[in-house]
Length: 116
Length: 113
Image 1 (cartoon, each protein chain N blue to C red):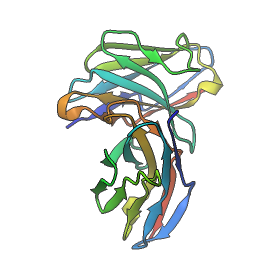
Image 2 (image 1 turned 90 degrees about the horizontal axis):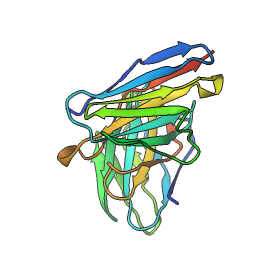
Image 3 (image 1 turned 45 degrees about the horizontal axis):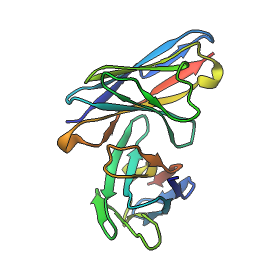
């Protein structure tokens, strides 16, 4: 149980286009989802926290207009990278938190974004 | 603010060798401490955790003890296998693991047959 998926697993796009990444909790309801960014050979940096049905809370230094987060249901959150540039190329990881015995973060496999 | 420092890798070992990955932290109050593992091409998985001082977390032969006096949570395994090759992250949170996690930089471990 407690499986989190991400789609796509990798994406290549042209500079200036927008890319949407989905994060789904497959077998539990996630009241909260977290979005992280991981640079090569570096640690995870929390970008934002999203609660179902409300606006995401962004970490300091993360542009909310650049990285749009929507958490429309208890099993789905999306991250849209708008007007992507090469410096946005990175590994994006989501995690989902349930309730009760599942009140911990379960991580997705990540999405590799390459902006040309 | 909270921070986690762990030894830089890569750490290269032979099979059946003893593994230690050092982790120290800075935090106010009484954080919970975690070790996550990221196998190649996969997401992070919780390996073990400890929620209060002197607790020992253990899983899959790995152990780590919450040492408040030295603010440390070192990861150990007595006899590693090739399948333990992965990146290991030390992390902390105030409260349960569902709260915001602060990660260390990660340590890549490579176990050779």
